[in-house]
Image (cartoon, rainbow, N blue to C red; front, side, top):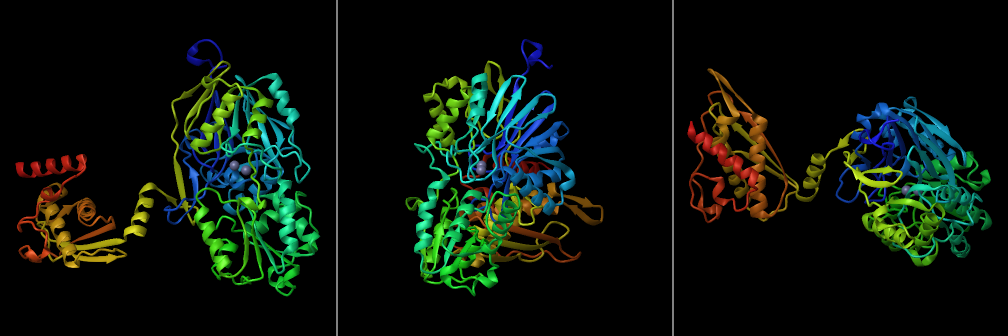
Length: 622
Ligand SMILES: [Zn+2]
Ligand SMILES: [Zn+2]
């Protein structure tokens, strides 16, 4: 067995979250001991405002790519997108020998892998409650049934050479679960009794006092709204909220309404869940959407995606009058049985507004009793701590303030402040039987995928898209002669740029910028061609012009459009274009003459300024 620094005791267990901290989403965690790497979940997150054209956010997996040979297995806690959504993408980059997980999650994952064409990159193995699997030389994992908004969800007890780590996954203590599958608290208590070295626990609702109500609690309110509705009932929730969907189907049956399903994930998840027996509903309860229009409104319930205001989801399209099959009627009752994930609030309220403007009755919001969280509140978190009695504690699955709140709860429960860590993605938790500390972090960050799910949108692409969206684009076209002079006035084009500036002024600035670069940088950017055309670093030259003009626009007009400069060599023999003397009409209040960049630069960045003066100095020295 390897030892730490060749000294006493076993080397530390390393637990490295690559996603899911300081955020809700893309939960991805690595357990590492000796030569063994075990992954726990690999989720995705959805883009925030300003991530133009980005569909999916994934964690940076450089660390896994570098160490892929040591990956022994992945264990999955449950089938929510923020826990399995990243797996098909990662499988394009590295193999995972085997993935263990609950039946429902594995079935959903199988579909995603088929779609991505990566089924040959791993083996899927479903596990049952209390099943134990061995991963590599150093890990033994027991799957403990827990309760959550998703059916078939697990908490993990991972036995390692330094002790037992309990990894809660997403949970709440629901004592009346819709599917009758109870939280296996006896098993948690068993580990607590034997001694848990460290608890990694779900912090989503750490700020909320009390217990999270049972999923069953929404049943009466939903029943009331459905039974009192005069016309159609339209309900939106997460497709993956299996228990909620089950109850809605039960209520449809009870109230004599046929169910029409809209949205790909709704159809997909319900089909899988029914096939595996997680949802019981007779076949004739469902009517294809095209036929359901022939039924009386009072006998109709439409269940659809769009609870988060996602622009392409069914309910959002209906609210914009863009759905081919369903139009809102004033007699409709529309129920939002979900609460917005932080970041989606604005799109949700906009959808509600549009639906109300179409005359429908819309039921939404916290006070209505039509939604409960799938995550435990403070009292649930205390119960988890009480059952497991961990020596060390690490709050996970939450934004920073939630992690802080959760750590306070743990302190109140008697875990010493020195025995817990608040960590960020990429931090390394090093655990020994009697210590917890942060090791050197590994690379962590985000990868953004666009609609194709193949192209990675890096930081530069994202910045350019933001500039395009917010300030538009300016293109510059210029022809340069062999000896580094402008052959004609540059052509300037604006798209999406709002400015009060005279277009002529922009042309003059562009011309000056090019002039400055040619005058001061031509020698560095070109090599004489011995009679032939010189070799010129056109890209470098364009970049210099773009940076210079950008700086001027930011300073003079407070806009930051994307600038695209295209420079071409002028045909040989083109006479240099003689710039007209600076027109006073430019109105800059500056003496006309040779444009000098430095004179107007009040606050250039230190780096740029140094580089420029050095360049000018070098030019003069020759
Ligand atoms: Zn979940
Ligand atoms: Zn989650």
